[in-house]
Length: 232
Image (cartoon, rainbow, N blue to C red; front, top):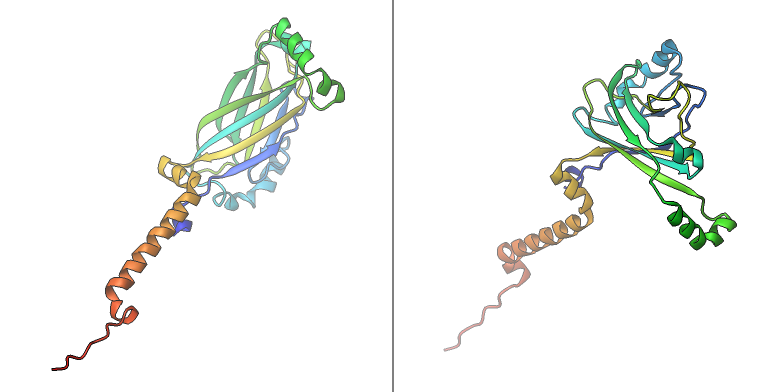
């Protein structure tokens, strides 16, 4: 019963490696397969055989949300860079863009006094190398719906402001993590988050109902009644 009622959300997590040889650094995360994206023919050849498996991963009309975690050094270059854009494209097996979304992001502002105070407080682990002078930015993308044409690959691009020339205004990044998750309806989401509690209560209610049924319908068998003889 729990297997039919509770639906496990999809979660795909992967480290991204951006290609900085492009004007817009780009990274790919395969849902089924990305193939060789630079070559359209080869991309089609490598992904066509796996398209039928995509329906087992992401069902049509399923809501999706994506989160990009960027770890950026708190360098003067990144602070002076200001705002840059992160774009996520959903690609089909033949390289067609199914959906696209962009979001601005930047390093969180810290005044010189706050930075100096934090550096003094963290001077020991900084010197030992246990922590780095970096920030992790979480960029969330929501509102995606899986269509009838399945998503085969995700493309993440870093775009600079319009004032910069092509290839300039790109932030320096330590590490990038991409997470793709499905959004369940409210009732199924509650069942998933409280699945252990729901399982225990369902088991207790089922046991109570079965026990009552046995006591009511099979009482003569469980508790036999001894007839007493009346002597006159």
